[in-house]
Every structure is written in C-alpha cells, then in structure tokens.
Length: 584
DNA sequence: GCCGTTTTCGGCCCGACTGTTTTCAGTCG
Image (tube, rainbow, N blue to C red; front, side, top):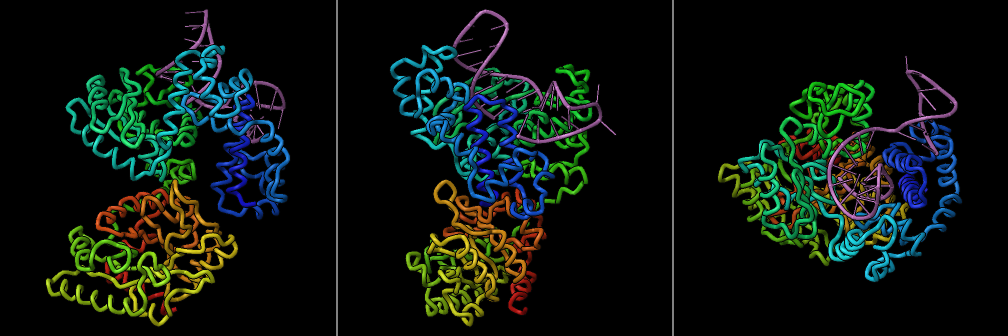
C-alpha cells in the first residue's frame, strides 16, 4: 500500500473519531500524520524497513504500529472496526454547511438518522427542530444545505474562480472608499481546486464597501451581510466572502485569511515561541489575549510580519506548511518563476487535428501576444477521434508550416512556429510514429490517450519506455487526470520522473485548468532530480494561450524558478536544448 | 495520539458567528 492511500485512511480515521466524539486533539493527530505522509519524498517502505518512521515529527508509537500494519498487510483491523461502527451516511452529512461532528452524532443518537435522505425527511417532518441544541433555524439551514449541494458542486476549478474573482477585485480596487484590497484564501494560494472565493479590503467606510460588493453583477444571492463581512453566492454556485478591515489591520488579516490553515498554525506557534501573539488583527507583544494598540508590533505589509518572526517573505503559493518555514528561516525561498518569463508553448494543436485555428491564424495570434515561438504538435494517427495525422499528412503540414515561417521572416519578424507532434504512447510503450519521422520534428511530446485501465506497473513501464526514446523531448500530461471529472491513471510518478532524469527527458506541466498535470506537489521531487519542466498550453484555440499564466502559477506552487522551466529560454537557446537528447 | 530548554502529564492556534441559550456549545475558516 502506498503512502497516499495510507494518508487517506488516516484522514478517514480522524473523521470517524470526530463522529465518535473523541478528543479533538487525537483526531487532529491523525490528520496531521496524514499530511506529513503526503509530503514525504521517500518511499514509506524504505522508512519502515530502516526503522525510521518514529523519527518523523507527529508520528509516535501508536501511529507507527498502525502505519506499519497498513503497509505490511494492506489492512488495519482498528480502521475496519471503526468504519463498521459508523454509518457512512454520517460522514457524508459533514459536507452540509452548519453540520459538524457533534450535531451529526446527535442526529444519529437521538433520531437514528444514518443517511442524508433520512435527514431531509426528518427536517421536513419538523423532528430536527425539537432536539436539544437544535431549533427552527438550524433545521431550515440543514434543508437549504442539502438542496444547495444537490444543485451545485462544492468544489470548483481555479480558472472558474479566477474568472469570477478578477472583475470583482477590479471593481473593489476602483471603489473610492477602498484603500487596499486583494483576493485571499485558496484562490490567492493558487490551489487547483477551490471551495469558495475570499476577498479582503481595507477601508474607513466598511459599510459602503460591503454594500457595493453585494450589488456586484453576477451575485445570485446574499447569504450574510454585516458590518464588516458579507457572503454571497456567485454564478455557478461559487460562494464568495468579503471582509473589510482597517488599513492598519490589513496585512495581518491578509496573512490570516490567505492561510493555509496549517501555515497559520505554524505562524502562531512561531509567534508564541517569541513571546508574541498573532491573530487576524495584529502581532502583539503579549502572551495574553489583547488588542491593545500599545502592544502592537507595527507591520505595514505581510513581509514585515514574516520579518518579525525571523522569516524571509513567503509567497502565497508556498503557504501550505510544506517546507516553506525551513526555507524561509535559512533565507532560501527561491525567486519563483513569473508568468512573463515564458516565451511560448511547446504543445499545441491546430485545425489539422482537433484544434481550431489554421497555422497562419495561430502564428498571427501568438506573435501578437508577444510570444517568441509556438510549437504545433497535432495528434498522431492513433488518436483518430482527434483527427490525428498520419505520416503523409504530417509531412504535408511541415511544408505548409515552413511556408508560414518564411512569410514571418520576410516581414522581418523573429517569431517562429516550431514543427512537432503529440505522439501517442501505445499500450506497449512504443510510439505511434517511427523514429525517422520524429527526427524531422522540432518538438516531440509523447502522451497517453488510450488504454487507461492498465495496472500501475504496466503504465509506469509504458511511460518509462517512451522516455527512453531519444527523439521524445517530453512526456505530456503524465497522469491523464481531469480535475473534478476523471481520476489520474495509476502510475508510479516518481519512477517515471527518475527515468526522465536518467534519459534527459523533460516533464510537461500541462496548463489546461482541468489538468495541471504534473501536479504541483511533485515538482520539488522532479527538481531534486534535475528534471526540467515545460509549461504547455495544450492549446486547441487562441484563448488557451492564457493558460500560460495559470501554468506559471502552478509552477510557482511547485517551487519552480525561471531556470527550472525550458520555455523561458529564447528561441536560439531553446533550439540548442531541443538538440541535446538526440545528440546523447 | 503526540510531545517535552520549566513537563512523562497536561497541554495541544485562535477568534467570529450562529443559534441556542440565559452563559455557551458547535461550527467555520
């Protein structure tokens, strides 16, 4: 059993213990241990066989035994007994806003409710309002929550959230009573999936700002509206919260509401270690609860807060408590990639396969955006649903593409379309085109588009074999996942990364917001193996060029710098790099 | 369940809001 599955089970144990009414610190210990395992870079088996599991902070004697049992036998008796003792419907009920473990347990204990459907029936019959600690309001809120969950998803793509958030943020920025404003929360941290959108503003007239916010176009309903905070539902059912604070409080509130929760906990602990107290209102020279301005440590920006806690500035994307504190203590936070460092995309489609524009139109558009180059990598013949090219059509495309490049050169432009293919990796790991054809192309991306159901060993071998081909520059969307839609296929990503390191193959960061594949959590491993990243739009139409910005944000979240990303290179340097693997 | 420059026991991040209460528990971020 791999560490991700072990982490899932530990998280679930934590939730089940909550429903049992266990000591909250015990339940948190399971959640913490799960997070620690997820962040591990070493295989769990290795840690266990070398008897080093206990050296990890947050894993004591009891968890060591449980993890070892899981890894060794694939099962855990404690977990199975616990799971059997709690109806699965209770876990589902926790998704309903306002329902936590205590209330869910009470509903189960007193009314025998075990499913969401039963809960709905009980609410409609008025039985829930009669319980101690419940009332009319709680009952109708639960009903609303059940309805809402049926209508809307509770998790959304980052790209959808940004599309809604940016116009609102612009609006706030232009409001005369707004001093400073920003997004916060998971949107600001650039998480690939978000729950809601958080905004923060500073103002001397909070009421005006709140009023303005709740009247934005695109607001479907207003859930709450108070003196300093409002909560609305936007199109698509995405909830958005705005908090308005004084400008003095702004940096503290921004840090606090940006999170992550785990990052904030570590920040407060650092404050306590220094005899300080940190909350959303300020950093205070006092161990006691206070908001006394005389005790305030003045900070004008988030950077000042980090400085007071002996830390270098930590960009929002890194605030996941995944090593940023150790790096910031040593002043080793890298200078992260900027999206403007990117010069073009090396994996894109045209109307020769399943994309929209012609070669000429694409060249004109991308040159107009300021790109230095743009690779056309249409599908190969096996992807016939995507109108994949056979060798004959590909050679014809190469001629037409050369023609387009000549016309740009004649105009005195340095812009260049690069030739290429997104060649299918067949079930046995062979490629859809012969090597001699691949050798004629500037850029070769190898990806899997069929045969998703192979087991992990087969899939891993298949990808490694593709990486071993010296004409393959990079592996495309390594896991094939479609966020919120399709699970990744089973593959040992670290083993494939190791193979890329050995063969000099690059790994794509597919910037399509449904993909963001390779996942940001794996880039520091790839980086440690000196595997280079290529941020690709996988564009099928002009608008997809905008994915570069999203991809760069995900790369930042993976701690990548300009030097780690191939398509930051100028054309000449890029061409040189493209030739290296073939010369090996 | 974890952890230890006051500790092997008694802590474990912090505050707001809501709805239910009559001083607070539960939930949320």
